[in-house]
Image: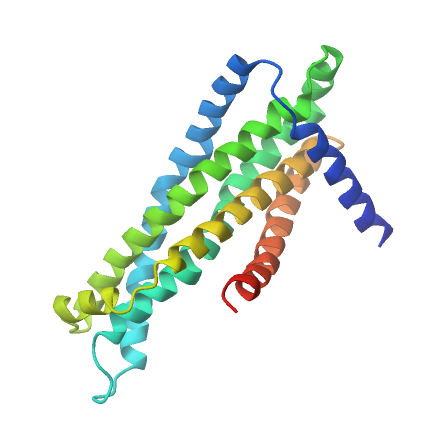
Length: 246
């Protein structure tokens, strides 16, 4: 319990240092653009690849479970759409990014900590937490929603291909995609994604920032970053679903 309270205390102390106005906007912009590339652009490929095939699997499994002549065929498109928008794209993609982006952030900052680069920044009077972590958090908040929206689109294309493979016509599938569409579901997904983006970037930065030791400590911090980010994503997924949709 005391260890948990210690982690919470250190986390909030770090975030108090992070959430400050950048001392040099030129340096901040340069770092922000770099983080956009590393966190966002470099993650597009894996997000599109996973979304396409999961979308196909979702539609095939839905079709196989709804093999009843009394059920209309368009339900395949409807179920695939809601599954992708409400749960898979915002939550599963965030979990995947927690593994890819979170471990990268923790290992990068952890390596700087154990090699005393962060200490050197502090000696020079630089707010190391704000300089290193704030661009990562803002880049995550900006790009995670873009990745999730791309995931929704590609996932539905994959679902369409999957539906065709089990003899669901394009007309029926598209009718299901459009049937009683609730636009608030997109808003709900984006809200969840923003919360998850903050969780992944801040928790991963925390474990890297307070890493102690050598190379083993960096590996440990990366593992802890992924584990705790995933746990908090699942917890807040339940909380946000209860608060927003219930």
